[in-house]
Length: 484
Image (tube, rainbow, N blue to C red; front, side, top):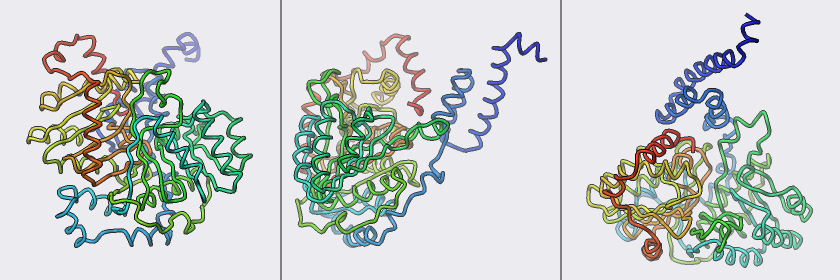
């Protein structure tokens, strides 16, 4: 037997691979996960010897209910509960607002209040910032004015020109006595040790999100902190698609980069703050003391109603996906979607197609080239299906469109970090701002129409004529959609 193994090493390893793969497949089936995800992983185990096992052990293990994500102490803090209870709206007030400005979107408010205890906040001022250059100009100015604390949480924090400018500002503020806390994703960021030490020496508290060290690699690589938020003094903050990198400032080495970020000042920042503190406790392995300065009283900054939705494997439900699903089903006139990656689950896909077929004008704006060939082909595999439901599809040709937004009926808008794909809905830590305001929504539609000027409209007859080679690529990538 030993001699046979020695003479047939590859064949023996192949047999061992499939023995382990069969056991793993049974384990996946017994977990009763999403059937599409289950089939994708089992298929990878069958058709990709050795590689399939690596894919599953690196990316496929489910930890939504694992102890590593059971970290709710921030939400149970008496100060957090006090401001949430004060801001949460009862049925009578919701009925009143439903008749005024919420209209059919009141169900989104109810959903998040019931699921996450995240209130609809008033007295907010919201500014739309197009592209990295506008975002960084505004953010850097606000950071320089910070008087108490600065909290940053970013998927990509690079040690390039923009990153170094930010680090310089943060170090200066920390040396002035301002408390600066930074979370950066270990996988997404390229932040060298020298700059981390520089920040720490200046008094900045900085921690990576789930650093990948073997043998913990298999349980940590899959779940990433995809958020891009900044909170200043607990009164104003930023959320959207723009990371800390030169790639987001035009002109950049990748070509033109189109993105959308929000500057919010007002009570909505309290919700953003609580989610940051929750992650801070996790990455720092500390129980940060919740102080009143994190949730200061403030005068009305504006007239915009905002609700914050956050999701990740630490939550019981995919809150952002459910909010988007509810918004689509509440639409009566129009839906304008911009996303860099359109790899929807069955719920979102069905909601969009049925909305279009019941008379709602649905428009989808996606990049023509994109920054990921696999995601591009997977996205393309859905185009014919939605074109057949009379959904209008636009390919952005000027460069990469990375904005993540949706406008419904010219009344409701969501902008945030979540793509319209399985990874954002189920795996990554994401956060979106939900805005119930016609003026902001109309501004977003105007921006959308300008973006369409840089697009090609996808014609169904022309799309059907694409070659078999292209269709095979699309179908192959769609099989791995839950893994992308």
